[in-house]
Image 1: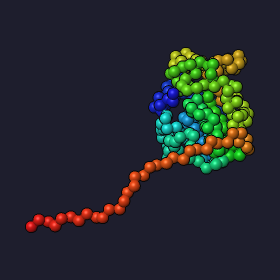
Image 2 (image 1 turned 90 degrees about the vertical axis):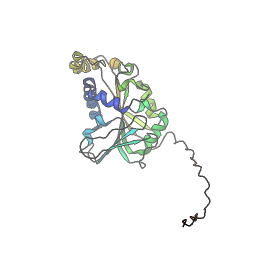
Image 3 (image 1 turned 180 degrees about the vertical axis):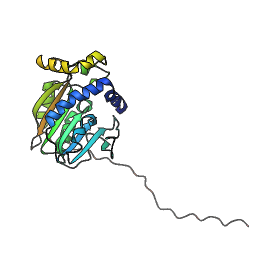
Image 4 (image 1 turned 60 degrees about the vertical axis):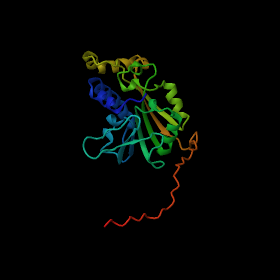
Amino acid sequence: MTPDVARVIQFYKSPLGKVARALVREEVLRLAGDVRGLRVMGLGFATPYLRFALEPAERVIAFMPQRQGSSAWPREGPSRTVLCDPLELPLTDAGVDLTLAVHAFEHIADGEELMRELWRVTAPTGRLIAVVPRRSGFWAASEGTPFGAGNPFSRGQIEKLLRDHSFTPQNIREALFLLPSQRRLMLKSARFFERAGRLFGPTFAGVLVVSARKELFPAVPRRKRLEHYVRVPGLAPQAAMELPPPAR
């Protein structure tokens, strides 16, 4: 089930949401690298993690799915968000250098078609960074956060989805080792849980942050879409009606 945009915004305004954004954003920045002069696209609800690209990138635009809803972003200047169907992105082929997908993959019913569309809009040697809930993590089982909605992924599942659709995984990092709790003590110890979690491996990680690069040739061709016909009623031209003369 796709969470409503108002609920996602409310989560990121909460203390837990602010901590989660900071921890995941660090991993996104490590994988994104230098974005100067690049065309950057956000998919799903990626705006909490896109601000780093606003100034150095050539352009930044955030696509939000229709079932979720959209909100204006950034707060200053003109909005860069677009409400659309993720399977029919209003972009030309090879028009994006870097895509950041957050709260996206787990909510798309047709993951294969989404990957075909991402391959189409990604430039040669372009990159994709996806943040997905980890299947056996505590966050995927928590209904109080956006990471607890939709279909989570294991490490092997997200790697297979990428490889099967001509994206080569380059790096996979884990994040959100703390429990999804609004308790103050838990939030204050967030950094400790992140450091301790990495020592014990990915067992307690809540999300996977995956970086992949586009391959030159598509592994699976796009499906041929059926044409949609719109029935238009037959309209025959009619003579203009003459109004009767006014009564005297």
